[in-house]
Amino acid sequence: MCRFCSQCGEQLQDKVKFCPSCGNAASEKPTTGTADTVDFTTGGSIGFSNRINAPEIVEHIKKSKRSARGCAFVVVPLPFIIYVIVSFVSDEVKTADALVFGGGISVAFLLFYLLSCFISNAKRSWDGVVTDKRIYNKTKQVRDDDRWDTEHYTEYVITFRTDSGKKTRSVERFDRGRDDPEYYPYLGIGDRVRYYPQLSYQYEKYDKSHDSKIPCMLCKTFNDIHNDKCESCNTPLFK
Ligand SMILES: [Zn+2]
Ligand SMILES: [Zn+2]
Image (cartoon, rainbow, N blue to C red):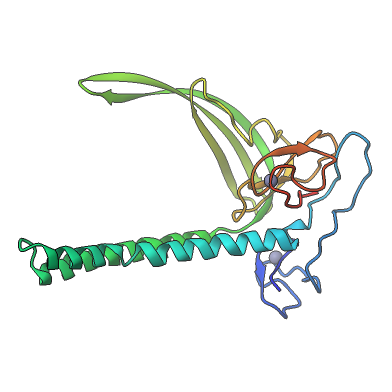
């Protein structure tokens, strides 16, 4: 059974008693309960959810890793295979050249895949606080056929300070008029958050007691705070 540290989100090996990343005691089995629930009639609970360990969520994370691997398995050998086939069909391309060229591209694809695995494994969950929120209206020059056009866009920037003292930011960028930020309206300055790099909606709010909506961490749909499962994808909400 796959487990995650309730403190830092690190994936845990089967029999460990403590998280190797943060030292937090690991719970015996995956828990699906809710956080220390404070029963407000209008808002949600206070406390980080332990639903990162809910079987549906664990399964989803495993599945997305599997599908990335499956995708790489198909894409990586493709240039090599195509070049070899082309070299047999066409007289222009020599087989030896095709082996080197197609093989080279395949190796480049493989390195790219391994690098992206390395980067996503290096991303760690953290707890922190929202320290600043800003909206920037910006412009950039883009080449449109034979003339330069000015493109307007908006950046919604949230700044966090993690518990280990690091400063980090979330930047949501939109073409002007197409703004639909997911984090900016939800998180307020002073909010305590937990960051989950492995989820689609990546920030969980600690204090949900003043909220009427809660985001689904897998499909990003905002649900009524009283829902237990997402009305759109039916997975447990982080409450
Ligand atoms: Zn941990
Ligand atoms: Zn959902």
